Length: 210
Image 1: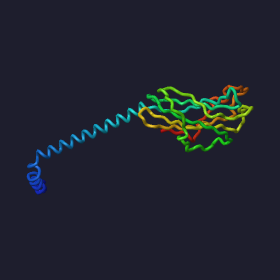
Image 2: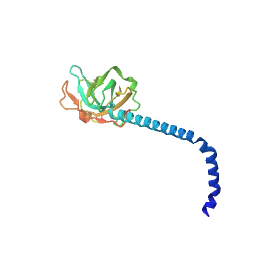
Image 3: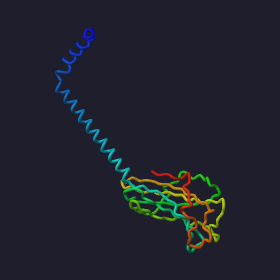
Image 4: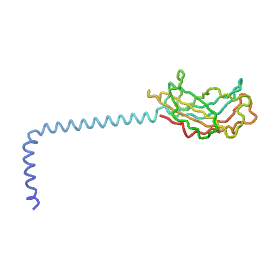
């Protein structure tokens, strides 16, 4: 029953193979071989690109910024906010540039978004893998009271870092730290640590990396 049912189909296939396949059998095999070779080359290119991308992810420089405290100046009635720029990657970060800004505010939820990394400056430093570089911001005018503890007053430190990641690609890290002035050290003297970096908090806005 079944052979009889499908016999027209087999007859058509036999005619088609005899007319269009058998005379060009060698040519068809050659085309198939070329397509298989092209597919193999394409797969090799994709695999190589993925391996290269994975290598970049594992080896590239990664810069992050950690709060390093507020320090009083030794010769002026002002303070300086310090940050540690850390390279957590396996390649040196080159052309490292930065800027650091500050602001006092009574709001512990100050909105700081869209930090403009184009404000960075300087000739560009190098940070070795797993090393850190400490930098300070602009002088913070605090007067003769030298950041006396003021409950409800916050000091925001924010800025941006740009650098090359070891594969010539330019990267950016922005940061924002918040200090509660209630944590000002008692009996503060010139040149002393005004607020420890341990007391700083990463603000909910302004922190990003590429």
